[in-house]
Length: 275
Image 1: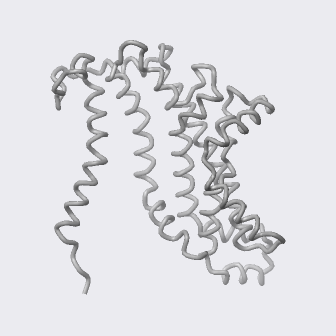
Image 2: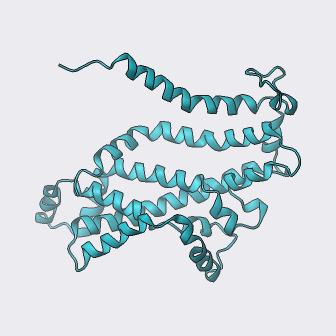
Image 3: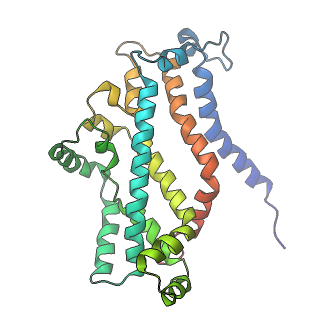
C-alpha cells in the first residue's frame, strides 16, 4: 500500500517553494517602485506609487543602456551555443557508448577528469585562442568555447547506454548504416536527453557573466548579464532599473523551462542508469 506524504513533507515543499518564489516576486515588485521607495527603511511590500519608469529606461531603443540589444545578443549566443553543444556531445557520446575503438576507455577517463578542473583555469587559454582566431569582441567568442564540454559528452553517453541494443541490431540486419542508425533511431529515442542538455547549455551560456566581460569590449555587443552590471552607477544605485533588467533576463528562462520541463525531468531520470 502506497503511503501518503506526511504533513512535514508538505511543509518542506511549501518552504522550498517560497524560497524560490519570494525573491522573484520581490525583484518584480521593486522594479515598479520609485528610487526613493526602493531604498526606504523599512521596505514597503506593495509600491505606494507604482511606476513603469524603470522599464521605460531599459527598453527604450537607442538609449544609454540597450537592454533589448543585450537580450538579443544573449539569445543568439545561448541558442547557437546550445545547438553546437548538442551536436558535438550527441556524436561523441554515441561513439563512446556504442562504437569500439582503441583507447576508448582511456579517452573517456580523460574526459571525465576534465570535470574536476576549475573553469577559471580555461579562461586564459581560451582567451588566447580567441585572439589567434580574431574572434575577440564577436559572437563566436561566446558560442564556440565550451561546445565540447565534458558534462555534455558524459550525459549523452549515459543516456545512450540505456537505449536497448536490439534497436540497432534490427536496423543493422535491414542494412542501415551507422549514420542512419544514429540519426533515425538513436536520436529520436533520445529526445528527453537532448532537450535537457539543450536547456542546461542554454542556461549556462545565458547566465555567464565573467567570460563575456573578458572577450567583449563594445557596449552594444555585451550580453544581458554583463550589460546589467553597467546599470549600477559609481555613486548611486537605481535599484528599480537593476531589478527591471533582472526581470527581463529572468522571464525568457522561466518561459523556456515551463515548455520543456517534462523533457528535462524525463531526461535526468533516465540518464546515468548504466555505467
